[in-house]
Amino acid sequence: MLRDIRTNYQKSGLDENTLNKDPFAQFNCWLKEAIDGKGLDPTAMILSTIDQNGNPESRVVLLKEFTSDGLVFFTNYNSKKGRQIAVNHNVSVVFFWAETERQVRIKGIAQKISESDSEAYYLSRPLESQLGAWASPQSQIINSREVLDQNYSQYLQYFQSKEMKKPPYWGGFLIRPQYFEFWQGRENRLHDRIEFQLQDQGWTIKRLSP
Ligand SMILES: Cc1cc2nc3c(=O)[nH]c(=O)nc-3n(C[C@H](O)[C@H](O)[C@H](O)COP(=O)(O)O)c2cc1C
Image (tube, rainbow, N blue to C red; front, side):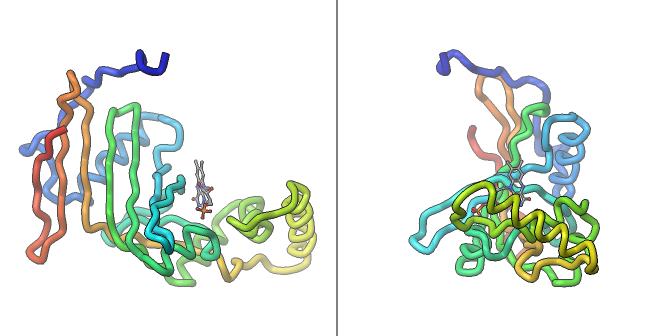
């Protein structure tokens, strides 16, 4: 029964004394530990955007870079998420790392990265992924699976005699965080939650009740 499934979290704690006062460093540390934890897809994050009616929409994307500016993921700019961000750049992402019993929630502002940075990343991807980006009109309705397979074959053939290049509609978004919440599962549902909020003077740090 679903109602009988429950985990008692007791691996670790999060306290103000050991917490890094820089949320980027704290995130980096947890990300590294999640990667070392060998869970499936530790860089997977649930990205929420807002549609034109103000309704949220969520999906998984992969974190491909984390720098002092923020989080970078790649996608089709003509996809639903790409179009939604073009109208409303406020986004949120959530990471859930079961192995380390942690969740991180981030809110921020998304902006396109430079064409040259997108190009450099695109050209570093395996050929199959590069062709996939050409073959898929992401988020559009297609008549059948065959449409994709045919597109893929056509591009495979096309690029046998042409130098590979990035589709103009494909690239990265940088999310500049303005808010982080670090959640560490604890015993008896008394989890640790610490939030960082970006203010004019820097980051404020507050503990939240679980
Ligand atoms: C594990 C996982 C990783 C994914 N990574 C990406 C990604 O990095 N970029 C992307 O555009 N879609 C990725 N997807 C697909 C998206 O979840 C989504 O189906 C797609 O981007 C279309 O979303 P949209 O119609 O809301 O734009 C991933 C899906 C999964 C399950």
